[in-house]
Length: 281
Ligand code: PAF
Image (cartoon, rainbow, N blue to C red; front, top):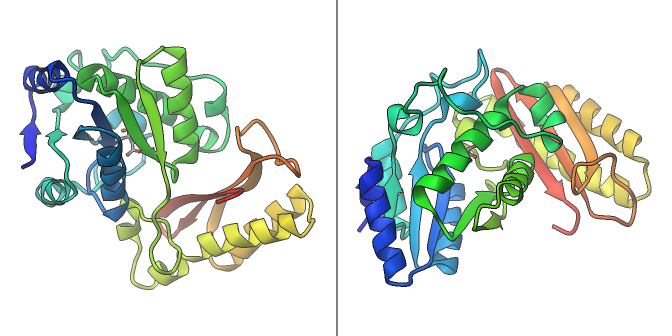
């Protein structure tokens, strides 16, 4: 039976009790509006730990001006029902005041260098600092033994790994595979912003990623592969932020014979979608 926790003392008491019993605790951080992709993270956490806490917090510090913070879908009742069915033990739903007791302007913010300078970090300035700021707080609040993050947010996962190492959080980061709709569209809470006409076209992102893999594996150069993908998506009506083929650690263009990742961020109408495809996946 899912327990809903909204006060920090109650969360701490529950987790401390589990730890006294020697149980391993997993955290699945989310912003709510949960779908099958999130529930697969909970199931992975279940398989790796004795108790699972999912957090739901739409984090204001990771949204830029003009982004979708206000309209980000909030569906706590459906989320709780889904978490219960997925075998989650507790949902941590802090208020903004609990998360940021000195207000947003009084927040101690983390600034993550390096991996945040490119791609999502370049297109959404401050986004990853906001993610790191809230995730560090979630780690301190829940004190999990492991935390599960989805591979769809590829760069976010790199930021979290950096954060955990840099601040020596005593926990394991577990990466969960991307869950896709039947036509290949990666599951995302933002998919529901797509109109009925846009929804089938959105699958073109996954098709473009697969075309990038085929072209690179057939011997095309990185720049040619990137140009092909951007042109293909533009031809489908997308406004492309980037379509790139990078080394797996995002340190630069892919090199043949080494692990790589293809990443796309593109807008369809008012909806910005991201997706990626890793070599060997
Ligand atoms: O991936 C998300 O949903 C968010 O960025 C996270 C990790 C929950 C932090 O707010």
